[in-house]
Image (cartoon, rainbow, N blue to C red; front, side):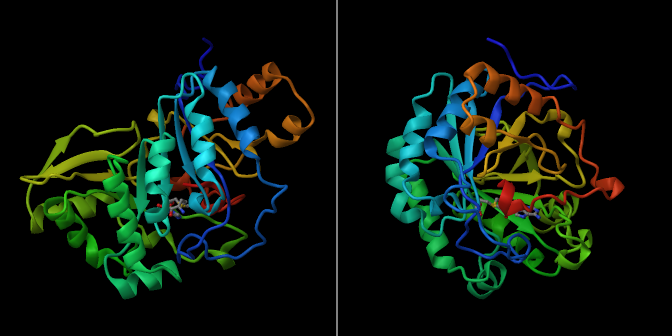
Amino acid sequence: MTCLIDNYHRRISYMRISVTDHCNLRCIYCTANQVPRLTHDDILRYEEIERIIRVSAGLGIDSLRLTGGEPLMRPHLVNLVEMLKKIEGIRDISMTTNAITLEKHAKALKSAGLDRVNISLDSLDEDKFKHMTGVGNLSHALSGIEAARNAGLNPVKINTVVLGGVNDNEILDFAYKTLNDGWHVRFIEYMPFACEGEKNKVFSENQTVSDKYIKALISEKIGNLEAVLPSAGNGPAKYYRLAGAEGTIGFIGAVTDCFCQECNRMRLTADGGLRPCLLEDGEVDIKTPLRSGISDDELKNLISSAAALKYEKHRLSEKVLPSGRQMWQIGG
Ligand code: SAM
């Protein structure tokens, strides 16, 4: 089998698929700028996603993550999971969701072949949750987490973006969840995006709370963090455990601890752009050639050409920020 190897000798084996740009939350740091959403015709149909992934699997893509927008906003997502699960070579399908409607879907998704979920949750306080998500109800997200665990979508990982002055006073509460409730919590550094110019930049990089700070705080206030291996997935997080905790604490230091040298991923946007890097603009349009009738071999070449566009590493430290799309248009 031909493998996808980029120009820096990294093997690409993981595809994040954004299935919609619609979201049922308005997180203050993510969907702050309202722009017209994609229409039904703009977004890839399930058959189109299936074909792209089947061809990608022939190039060594073996892990998939469904994301968005909010992936559960896309009707009949279970059908897509079923279709993707049948593709030869796909060994792991996961999803990133805000879990607001997960309670309703968890069992069916598991039966269809979804292996696990990452759930975005930035606050354990009802009022702050509403403030941070614009419209969200904390109890819905917590029910979604419970439903995911009960359905066996394990491990359920909780992703928490820490923003200075907003939810950084909850770091210890999240850490205690690994001790008291067996949660796997991952702290994610806020990544600055510069969309549509500075006027729309809601948060500054000064609000990125570094992994180093969070780790030191937890160690000082709760106890020693022992390094452990990840329970599933091959992402960029570094994992630790508090003594006696069932759950783990992961750190994704995208800004202060660049992990691009280990990057193994590409991203498919809902409107069919193949994006080699999260934090660098640049994409290959897959949808137009797909709808013009290209062959599988031509599709393979397009996917390979996107892998060849991967940057060596992001340039946040040089103040080069992604500006073409926002996080909700890429899927994280
Ligand atoms: N709606 C789904 C969810 O909430 O998980 C999937 C899409 S959302 C864009 C994916 C992840 O990106 C969420 O965990 C969100 O917190 C994170 N995110 C969004 N903007 C971010 C930023 N500027 N820096 C770091 N993480 C960000």
